[in-house]
Amino acid sequence: MIKLKFVEKDDPVTEILDRLKKMALAFKEESLEQGEVELEHSDIQLEGEKAIHQYLDEIEGQLGEWWYCAC
Image (cartoon, rainbow, N blue to C red):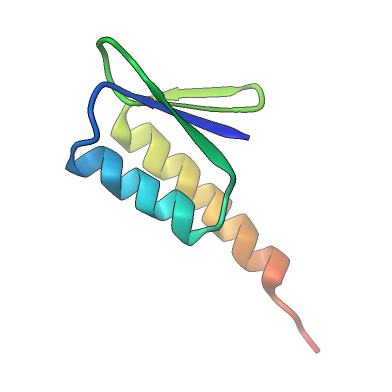
């Protein structure tokens, strides 16, 4: 399960949450006292919007390949 940790639910965090929902990924929201938004997934730990969006781009690509059917 993906854990998204953030100080407040501002626009950048909402954008990440929307992407997670759109991809129908299981995730849990956790609060941070300070710092940048963080994402944990298995043994992967990311910090910052840019790194998180790059990772979500990778997952989105994998989901596209998984759903692709050459029937």
